[in-house]
Length: 253
Image (cartoon, rainbow, N blue to C red; front, side, top):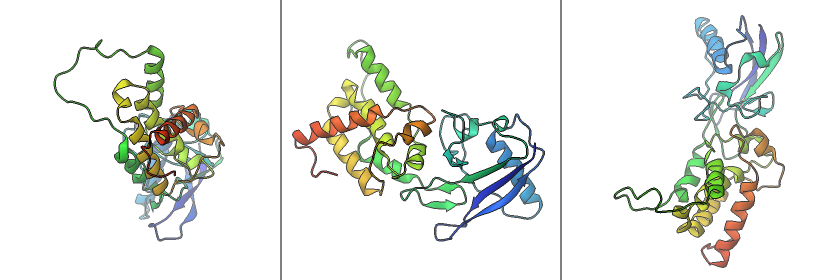
């Protein structure tokens, strides 16, 4: 198949950037989207041109590094799929594809399709962990966890931190990401000890990094490659209100 690509090209954070038209020729239907870009880059390098810069790592749908907005949709048209697991059979021969980086104030463009997502790391650093004794491994049945709580915590922990929720949100909000990280620890007894402090510092860090507010568009849930639900945002809000009653939060975000 042959395709026309309109790819965002930007030399650095201070560059204005532009959409550049490129041709993708003789693309196999069985190729992944990243393999298609590899093929295009090989042609660009052969012609002495600058290849397209894009993030990738595992190429197995695990890490979420392959963050791209494809035809206006983070990670492309297929639901619950990262770009690396999106295949060219989802596109039509002779069609046009628009490829852009994440669009959010908190994610400055580094080059072309690569953005700096370290703002999410700083939210985790603020409190996305538990402080536990690291001695001998306790008996598995020593701490009993209701199955419903364990299942919900596992659902929240599926978040891979790719930032698709931020890119999809009209406000550039990181509420779904932060809610998933707060919720999966708050649901388990090991995370309850620091729950009040955690929700305060992570929410404060989220606001400090320049993310917008949540206004219930639900675009975050639709774009999430792991299907993280907006119900976790409600859980974060409940945890935050409880922390305020306990006086754990220094100020309201």
